[in-house]
Length: 238
Image (cartoon, rainbow, N blue to C red; front, side, top):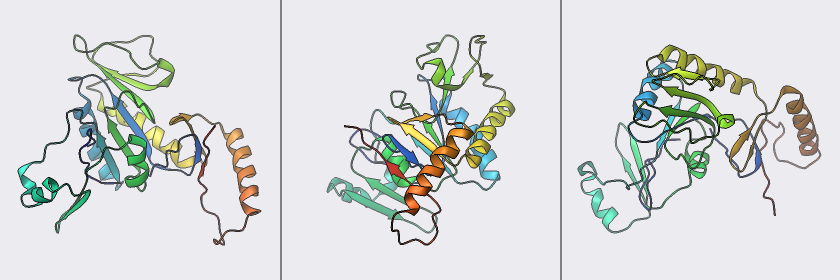
């Protein structure tokens, strides 16, 4: 969870660079929608399917109101009150790291979720990244606030004839089929390009051109590694 000026609980493949060429990272499914449209329930219904496949799954949730320090922290609350910048709570079952600072969504994914197979993001509707899935409910929220060309799918309880991929909330099978198709494509993609944090579609022909050019350039440089397995480039425009 990420809240303003508060803490985050860390779990951890995205190298979401600000205008760069990335090594393959996790598939990011960004579920957006107004309150009470079923975002949390939707993501929760997907997780068991991917965990049963043995995949590493990350979840990031926006907390606009900040994060409450609950009683389970007990004595650790004293450290929080003392304004420790980074605090780790370690038990035999799990580890919780609390960072007393706000984080950009993309920085959070890059730092702590880089070895996940998929990351499900809930909220952050003004920081659209990855595969955007919009939740709409009749009488609750019917605003199509994401441009249709940026949407991977709309999940709703009513028909949207002008949307290419419109799935229903009660059709979990079709939802999982869509997610699996996207993940399978990510496994075969060699090159991922993000411009201003937005994924740019790249066909096989362009992938080959970029890959061959970059590989040739890297091989002409002196590197410590005998074999190049991945390359990460960040480009900041002036």
